Length: 115
Image (tube, rainbow, N blue to C red):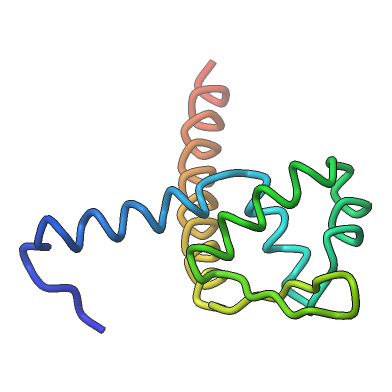
């Protein structure tokens, strides 16, 4: 889908809100754990070394934004990624970071070889 140009103010606000939701390192780590399938809060807490309260808080934000979904399993809940497009965004960001790192490395290497 192509974005309208210029981007309308309301759409810009929605995009920024979505980016803020996934713009937290703990939420990115949660999404990474959910990449291979659904997990409970207890599973995520153990894997990430975070508190149950912290993990639940971040899952709530992701759930409200529609990025993850929740399925009841007896007395607990299991979470999974509802919007796999979030991984494409992360991969694009990582690609940009790799390009920046390569440029920086080349720059530093160029400075050190001239000395």
